[in-house]
Structure formats: C-alpha cells, structure tokens
Amino acid sequence: MKITRLFDFAYYQLETHNLDAALVSKKNGGWVKTSTKSYLNKANSLSRALLKLGVKKNDKIAVISSTNRTEWCIVDIGVLQVGAQNIPIYPTISANDYEYVLNHSQATYCFVSDEDVFQKVKKVKSNTKLKEVYSFDKIENCKNLKDLLEIGKDTSNQKDLEIRKNEVNEEDLATIIYTSGTTGKPKGVMLSHKNIVQNVLASIPRLPLIEGSSRVLSFLPLCHIFERVLIYIYQHAGVTVYFAESLETIGANAQEIKPNLMSVVPRLLEKVFNKIYAKGSELKGLKKLLFFWAINLGEKYEPYGKNGFFYEFQLKIAKKLIFSKWRAALGGELETMVCGSAALHPRLSRVFCASGMMIMEGYGLTETSPVVSVGMHANKFFKIGTVGKPISNVEVKIAEDGEILIKGPNVMQGYYKDPERTASVMTGDYFHTGDKGEIDSDGFLKITGRKKEMFKTSGGKYIIPTLIENELKESNFIEQVMVIGENEKMPAALIQINFDFTKEWIDRKNLKIDKDHQEIIKSTKVINRIQIEVDKCNLRFGKWEQIKRFELTPNIWSIENDHLTPTMKMKRSVILKIHQSLVDKIYK
Image 1 (cartoon, rainbow, N blue to C red):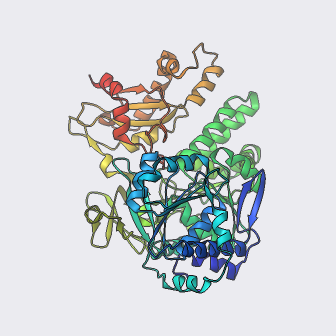
Image 2 (image 1 turned 30 degrees about the horizontal axis):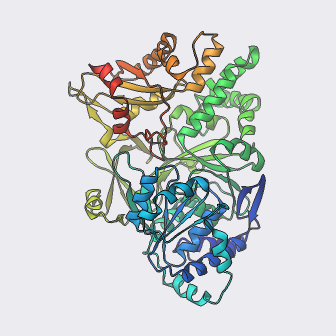
Image 3 (image 1 turned 90 degrees about the vertical axis):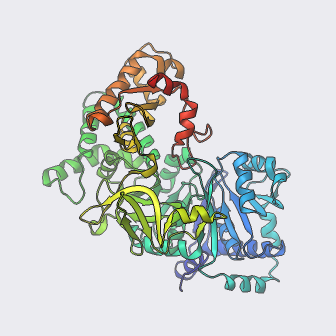
C-alpha cells in the first residue's frame, strides 16, 4: 500500500507484519503488549467516539504525557483519522505555558497522562476553550480515555469515519508542535502529513532495523518530532516498541527487554559515561589499570578499521574485558543509538562506538520534520565529528555567512498564526536554520555553531560559545556551562559543576569539604580543580577565545527552574538574568 498520511503507517504494519506485540508499556510491574490489530481497533474506537463528540475536521486536540506510552499512539491515530490535528505539549512546561499553547492552538479537547499533568491543566482550563479533559491513568474527577473507547465500540458511525479518513490528504495539516524557544513564547510549527511521511520514508534506509524482529526502547518525549518520527519508522519496519517507564529506569528496562536500538540525546550519554567513569575510578590495582587503558583506547577509535590491525586486536580484548560490561548494563544486545537534539562531543562518540554500541548522530529541526542528515555505519556513511550525510530528498546549502539552508518536502508549512515570522526564515523554498555548518569533501555535514549565539568582544573578536562549551563539558566535573562576554574585554564562563561527580571526587580524595552545594562551590580546592579543566580546554583555542575567568553557580540548571528548554537547550538570557550578580563579579 502507498503511505501518504501518518495513520497509514499502522495499517501498513497490519498488512505486512501484523505483530502480536506492536506497542508494549509497563503497567503494575509487568509489560503489557498491544498487537497491531488491537492498536488499530482502539484507534478506530477513539475516532468514532470523537465524531460522536462533534469533533470536526481541523479541530485541535492536545496531548500531554509525562512518559511515552501506548495510549499516546492510540490517541495520535484516533485524532488524525478524523482530520483533526494532534497538538503535543511538553509536560514539564509551566501551567501558564500550557494556557498559552492551549489558547493559541484553540484546542477543544485535551488528553493527559497522570495526576500531576491533570492538576496543571485543571488550573488553567477555565481560561481556555477546552470542553473536556481525558486521562490515561485513573484519576478522580477526571474522565478517562477508556470512557471514549467504550463509546466508540458502537460502530454505527463507521461509515462516517471512513468518509472522514478518505477526505484526509497528504497536504493537510497533521500537527502543530510548539517549539520551546530559548527566548519568548513558544512558536507553533505546522507540519503536514506529507512533511512527516516523506521524512520518515527517506530516513528508513539509514536505520539498521531488522524488519519484523528488532526490539527498540523508546523514552525520548513523543511530544518532540524526533521520537515521533522514529515511532513511525518502527511501525513501518514492523518492530516491537517498548516504552521505558521513565528516564530513571532506562538501564533496568533495557536489561529486561534487551533492545537492539534506541534513540538518545548527548546529555543522557554524558550522564551514562560519567557514572561509568566514576565507578571505574573506584576500582583498585589491575582492574583500574585495565579500565583506563580501555577508555584511552576507545578515545582513539576510528571506524572501518582505519587504526590498523594492532589497534583492532587491542580493541577486541578491551571489548571482552571492559566494554562488554557496559553493553550488559543496557541489555547486552544494543547495537545502535541514534543521537540528536544537540551536538555530541567526538570523544563520547568514539568511546561508545569502540564499546560496540554505535552512535549514529543526526541533525534536524522541528521545522524540518525533523531529519536533515544522519550517519549510518553501512556504506561508509559514518564519520565522527559530523552529523552524517543529508537524506535522499533533502537539499542542504551553506549560505555565504555559513548558515545551513534546507530545501525539501520536509520543510514546514509555516509558523501557526505568524506569517511574518514564517517569511523571516524562508528564502524561496529554503528554510534558514540559524545553525552554522560546513559540508566536507566527502559530503558529510558538520555543525560549527549557532548563528545567533556568536558574539563579539569589545576588542572586535568573534567568539563561537558552543565550541568552547562543548569542549568544557567533556570534563566529568562540568555539567553545564555558558560562555559569556558579548561587548566585554574577554570571554568568561558561568559553570554548573557536576555535583554528583564532584562529591564522589571529594570522598575519593578524603577532602574535608561540606557537601552542601553552596559550600562546595566556595571551596578553593574545588575551584582550583575546575581551573585545571578550564586551562586544559583553553589550550585548544586562540588567545582571544580563552576563558579568562569563571564563576560556579550553586543551583542545578534545570527545566523546572527555567534555565533549560524541554529539549535541554540553555535559555541564555534567563541564565544571565538569574546569575547577573556573578556576571557583575566577573566584569565589574
């Protein structure tokens, strides 16, 4: 069958694979399987119920879920089949932002996952056009998804549903995704069925999935287009999707289901590596020597045997003695991790690839549905330090100022209710990403920075903060860092140290330092240790780029405290405002 609309993927799976376990969620301590047939039956029940509620074509229906789960996918198809649009909302944003998105999109119904999300919606519901809220979990005084599925068991309006389904065409709007801007209110990115379907079909050849038999673990938020597109890819390939219970349980869930593939973000890989490194540091004698020998070997990794026979021989030993334990912690059968959303430092890429878990880095934006390029180990489509080669139907052009421009069927329809902003990012058919990059002689795309984040010092020198920040974050001691210095005489940095790792270091060194965060950042021993990391980083940069001063922040930069967007990008203006006194201390 020809796939032109998003709900076609599930019907394609029914026709080609018809899985007993298409979607699997953990409930009450056990994995609950939903077959392809049951998945579609429930989606159709929901569609029939929505028609009975009077949901019209182009109505907007919000979905807010704290975790990925089977119900999310049922709602996705149930909504799209009636010609309505699915409006996913990040669960972690504030109730005020819920109100903004619900009002801006004019959502008429809302699905929530749990009590916490429900309470946030309840707080603002009277200020919105919401007629009703339905939950996935059983919540007191809240209607349930099961109520709708029960209503939808009556098939008397199935003909109406078929008519509605047939009226949906590929150019129709499928979803509005509100991007968590680092400044101002979220922007509503309008993506059509065609935008996403074409992106899915062109991305499929890049993923090493074994049709009908691979197992994947899903935990990156489905409200983000990256994970959502992967779910459609998995449906097309007929592989079983397991939804992790939470970010905290990824290791335990992976050991239970032994995934072959999962998607990750750099922050998660950094945390995993830091934990492994901290455990390795506690080893004694020969075990410790072997651990660090393996890591040093991993840091020199090059794909396709470029380091020669002797290196590959040593790597075989390292895999058996050390790296096999890393893989075992994630189920033992994980072969590929698809990495997106932010830049991954080459060192991490090398170490994980050396361990036998290949990291395939990709690049894209919500506005490009999202995949622009992605690495692939087969056919030599993989090069460390790059985000792979553009997928088949996407054209990448580098503008004169180094900005990455994108053209293809994946480029959004525009920003919802904002034609001016849409016009500001388009030149003809080319979308301006705001990212800077280059394409090397082999056709690999490399991201070099963010156009808007570049700044000039008072001496007229350009600084690309992301390059310095990524280098500093290579340190196990540094969790987050923001390079500052626009119109100042020198660059400096605000640093949030990795408190967990630093506390372990304090114990290892038997230092008499109070474990309170305020006390840790005041300690001269800690400050001196961070200075070593900064000095090491500075060696890689020109004199005008080097960090001359830094200040440590006492709080953890988080989404909840408004330091970070839901996709873990820094809100630079907010961080500057929060830590203005430290900035003044550096420059005044």
